[in-house]
Each structure stands twice: as C-alpha cells, then as structure tokens.
Length: 263
Image 1 (cartoon, rainbow, N blue to C red):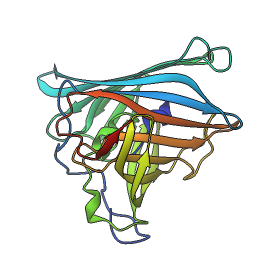
Image 2 (cartoon, rainbow, N blue to C red):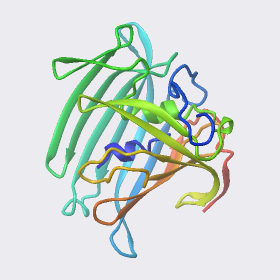
Image 3 (cartoon, one colour):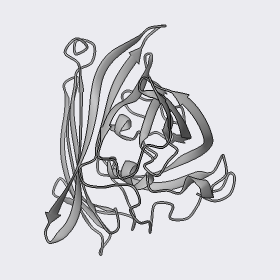
Image 4 (tube, rainbow, N blue to C red):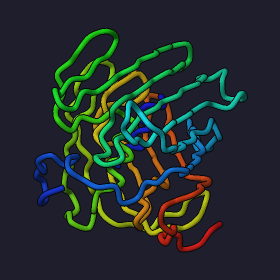
C-alpha cells in the first residue's frame, strides 16, 4: 500500500514527448536536514472519507562511508481502528548523496496486512550496479529507489515544461528496473485539510500491484513554491479510493509561499 503513497511520486520536453535523463544532473534546491512532513491518509468506500492512517517523512544529515548523505526515513501506519480492514506498518529509508541527490542505500521494511518484506539495497554508481538479496543487478546511471524519487523530483523546475509533458525516470524496486514517467498537468489552486494552496498538478505512472491499478489514475498536487512539497494525493484503489493530505511540517528550506490561507 504505502510504496505508492511514498511515490506521492512526483514528484521535462515539449508536449507529448519524453525528455532524456529527466532525473539526472540536478542540484539540491529545496531539501535540508531537519525537514519533517506529516500526512494523514483517508479511505473512501462510498461518500464518506474515513481517517485510515498517517505517514511521516524525516530528513537527517549523516555520514555514509565517508560521504555526506541525507538520511530520509518514511514511516507509514494505519490507525488501530482501521487495522481490522487493512493493517499497515511500513518503514522506508534512503541515503542520498548530498551533491547528486542519487541514492546510495535503500532499506524497505514493510508489513501490509501480513505481507512482509525486508529489502536492503546498495548502489554502486561507478559500475552501475545495485546489490540486493545477495545478488547484483545492472541499473541505469540515474536509477532511483521508491523514496529517493520523491525528493529528487522536488528539485525539478516545472516552469520549464508545458502541460502534458512526460518526465521519464527509472526506479529499482523488488529487484527489478522499472521505466516510468511523471506527467506534468499544469497549475491549479487546491483546498486541503490544511489550507488553500497554489499548486502544481502531476500524475505519476503507477506499477500495477496488490492495491493500485497501473496507469495514470493517481493525481498529486505539490506546492507551487521553492519547496515543492506534496500537498495532496488522490487515487482510486481496487476497492474504493484514497486521499492523502499534508497536515504539518517543520524546518522547510524555504517559506511556504504557496499557502493562500490556512484553515
């Protein structure tokens, strides 16, 4: 469940075309150590939105084998009152090189209604290799993990692209390389549980799984300011639909100037 809530995924090219190396060769414009973003997850089966759980993302600065990295942790869980429907206890970690924003290590520890996975991946950028479950895999130069893709995409300059543009990227997940893209839809104003925002609207291409259908049905709104934090995610699932709203934040690198008014 949570891997595509992580892939709030955001987050370049003329209309209807794919940009080459869309997720390569960027610089960090928005992320800093100490950032925290908290989300509430709602589930809808008919006309009623029911609070189902929370997800929290924290960023720390640390050292990994002599390299300065952002250590980002994403924890997601359903509320006890919702566990009887679908219990989730997920933890994702990525270690990003502060200079390139490319992942060097990824940890996935999930329990989704009894379906458990523990996966530890290390990336060798020089040799374009990923090491997972005691096996090695060939990967593209700028391959992302499911959590690093969110933070890398936050640094995209959306103003350079026209509505309808596709932003391709590659992701290594469950010992496979996926060729995906994010579609830039355009600018919008959105009202969330937190407030009213000027936003950027995007649609990630999803991998079909146990909860989500494949395709572009997920819609994501990110703040139209220099932070590009996710504000809302909406998506149908196999039964019903979900909505994820940003509820609180701390230590953003830039002012949240996209906020029109807080509710």
